[in-house]
Length: 158
Image 1 (tube, rainbow, N blue to C red):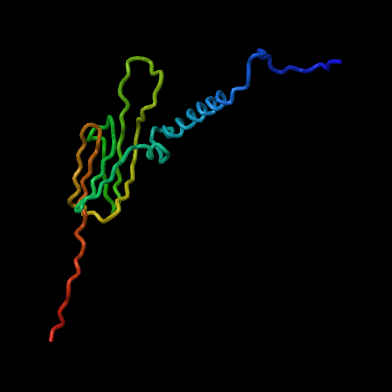
Image 2 (cartoon, one colour):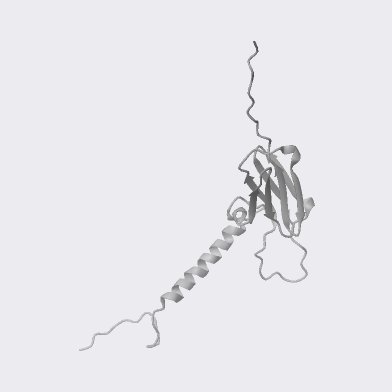
């Protein structure tokens, strides 16, 4: 005798469980959530210190006499960037302005609004000799190192 069964979902007989499809669905949902976190915009348009500041590419190169910092700032004009040096920390902040659009915006994944990047340099910097340039969306900062104090032998007077 056959017992009756309840079928909650009607599936074709040839359909099989696909674990890879489930992984793809979870991956898509996580990507959507991560996109919300990375954009990190507060209600007034100011970006806050989330992953948005961590994904901006920064290179720090140390030479014998300087630290050279390169920071990608695509679409930012030099008038919209301010750079401060506090001890051995560079603070770069400014605004990425949203451009005027003529049509309906269907997708927006490029950041706009205010930003702030803090870059700790691994040594002391001579504040008077820091130079900055912005070319092709790359901000380059040349920070000369402070001259180290050299040991000096002190002679004892007779």
